[in-house]
Image 1 (cartoon, rainbow, N blue to C red):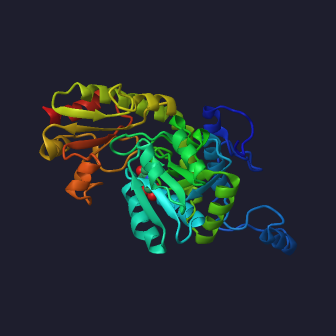
Image 2: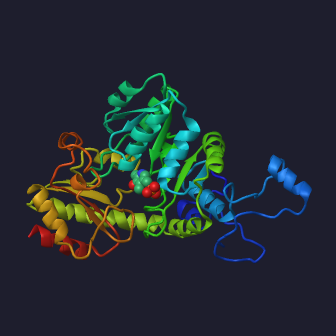
Image 3: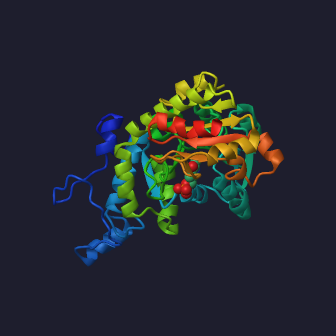
Length: 393
Ligand SMILES: *Cc1c(COP(=O)(O)O)cnc(C)c1O
């Protein structure tokens, strides 16, 4: 039920939803680089400001290019409303500050983006909003952590880097029983592979920086959900506090959405081929990828997702030394923590994204010293294999 009301399918919505042609009859979407809008009279200005007449006032509130992006993404996620933000982090911040107050409580998966953990633990905590962290796949741990003050359940599925899944339907029921909102950061799957709102989630968060752009160009984010929660409450915070998306970035993300499905299919196919190849390698202890039959939640992944995504990790038997040697032996794959790009990237989580954790905490969360994460891009599979095989030799 999006604002784009024809019942077109995903691929059609991805290239056409949200576009309103101007009097120029342009085929491609224009970029409206304007900070404010002109009224035909003082009376019209007054009506716009009072809300009596809908329409543009100022680009912190609304912008036609940004609106095309939010309507298109809403159509793809099956959401009533969408707001666009300056980054993925400002999407999470805006959601929390719009919906929470001092004394409220969040239950969050332990396996979330490191900066989100810091936002919850360091900054929301300062405002008297407490967060409890639980193991993502453990439904009983979620249930046990809920208090009367709990307002949000927050997660990413599959997780990064170990690709664990949460059962979104079950968590949505749990959230409903306790009058909480289920928030899913859908960054890794994108609506091309997983649509959490259709599974009962209340809010979907995006870092548009990743697969929605898909070519590593712009930083941006989005929040999706109901007209009341997102279209009114989160939007109200956003237009007041100001971490909104620029028209230029919205235009770049629109171009990304047009190819989202075919890119996600390609990322998934290449990641599966690479994961199967890695699983045959004697120097690798374990491969983590939801598309492998050996993945403990392979069945759930098949039901909940329409593809397995571009993220995989694997553990080398030789520990950190072997992991660093493999990374340093690559010539093509980029050594960087970013993901969701056409270019494949490789990282050593224990000394980068999870380097701030103690050895004990890393052990608890399964981040072994020999673990390597690959965000599989769109290069040729044989070239990726050649690049990784050098370090395995
Ligand atoms: C990158 C990322 C974010 C933060 O997004 P930015 O656009 O970098 O602010 C949030 N969640 C996940 C899962 C991410 O990968």
